[in-house]
Amino acid sequence: MKKPIIFLVDDDPSVLKSVARDVKSAYRKEYRIMSTQSAVEGLEYLKELKTKGETVALFLSDQRMPEMLGVEFLEKAKEFYPEAKRILLTAYSDTEAAIKAINEVQLDYYLLKPWNPPEEKLYPVLNDQLDEWNSNYIPDFDGIKIVGYQWSPKSHEIKDFLAGNLVPYQWLDFETSEKGQELIELNNISSKDLPAVFFEDGSYLTNPETKDVGAKSGMSVEAKQKMYDVAVVGAGPAGLAAGVYGGSEGLNTLLIEKRAPGGQAGTSSRIENYLGFPNGLSGADLSRRAITQATRFGIEFLSPQEVKSIEIKDHYKILTLKDGAVVNAKAIIITSGVDYRKHPAKRIDEFTGAGIYYGAATTEANACQDQDIYIVGGGNSAGQAAMYLSKFAKNVYIVIRKPDLSSSMSQYLIDQIGGTSNIHVLGNTEITEVSGEEKLQKVKLKNNQTENEERKDAAALFIFIGAKPMTDWLDIEVIKDKRGFLETGPALIRY
Ligand SMILES: Cc1cc2nc3c(=O)[nH]c(=O)nc-3n(C[C@H](O)[C@H](O)[C@H](O)COP(=O)(O)OP(=O)(O)OC[C@H]3O[C@@H](n4cnc5c(N)ncnc54)[C@H](O)[C@@H]3O)c2cc1C
Image 1: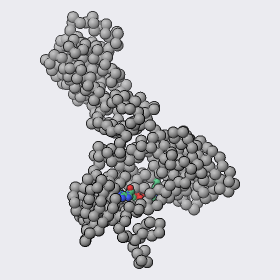
Image 2: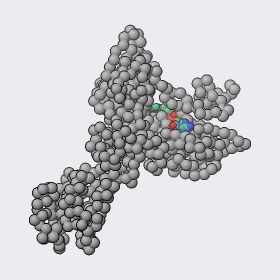
Image 3: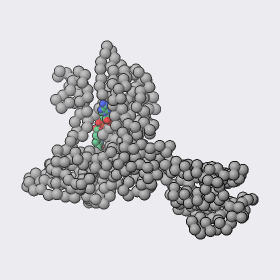
Image 4: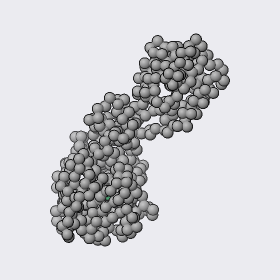
């Protein structure tokens, strides 16, 4: 965690040096001491510090300075850090002005120069002020901050991307978070350019592409070599396992993932049937463990990066990546998994990312607090999502075309759902239309036996209706079945 700052301003270099020396000797363990001779420069620093998410605990400023009076500086500093303690350093002759300022602009204290010995004249005052400041201090989040509109598809995409890549972030809803609004105003960002992503070094990107957010967060999208023993396309559980075994066998292995490690499993809130985890584990935890294991064996991992095509020349396979880069491999393992099938209800595309999500239960769970939400699908992934979301939502409705879950969901999940009072299974039901203004607000339910239709309020809709293979991009001669799955093993004998 970053240390809070004690900020010193005095135009006289010798006074500044000695006050900094005394403050450092007593407080440097718990605070970072920053000092400047220029009040104007000081205000510039404050803007930068605020953007970087740093916290100032206390300002100590000289009163008589050529650029502006200390009182004026402290007033301006308050705009950046309203909670920080503000102390004025004055000469004896300025005492009256200092007292007046304390009353007028509510400074916390004034100190007279010289402050020797500091143990008697300086530290007791600073201790008192810092104790008070600390009693109200809630440390700021250190990592990436995203400021945007809750129902913006782009905001959802970035949150989902960072969560999938195991990068911690803080979400600040522009409409409700004062801190978010402050960051946007401070950097003169127009609300039409949201979402904005702020990084630890104080820089930010507005309305960014996920690949740019990935690059700034330290993810690697460029292969280090031109030739690999084996390239693995897709880092779901299958690709991660291939990566681990490639690496452990000493093969020079490249693992390429277009979104986030873990694939579908990475989006699961709780996987209970994975070997070796008797209490179950989240998809994020599984991905974190697998990627650590694979990289420990020395594999190279590119994410977010997509393989666009494969070409075979002599004994080599040439992979072309989304950004045009080319890598060669002696062997390729394709573990590109599947992608969600689109739900056919009317207007579904309009609200995708704005209340309607394919999978992605975990990143938007907080927004479901005390609301009625819907899940479509009767498989295990839908069941896991229902269990997870039931901790946030008022009611979770599972919509399925079949009469009940018995033919499509594991019994352990059916039992858990049966024992959760705010989950309701709507059998023989379909969603035929969705509606809303800027975000999803209602779903139209149709009973496929009675043909009855009704509209219901819905804060969110999570879709888990099966998937199609992600193999369209693959145009080399490999054998696919009629649904697009790559044939492997004994199935190849048929051809
Ligand atoms: C919400 C949910 C919960 C689940 N829960 C369970 C459970 O509890 N137990 C269980 O056994 N199974 C569960 N499953 C199923 C399980 O997750 C899948 O069977 C498993 O993820 C399949 O792994 P895979 O590696 O084959 O493919 P995927 O997981 O689909 O991964 C494929 C990866 O390849 C990437 N990719 C695709 N094309 C490219 C390309 N051209 N370039 C680069 N990368 C590419 C994709 O982005 C993706 O990350 C669940 C699935 C979901 C969606």
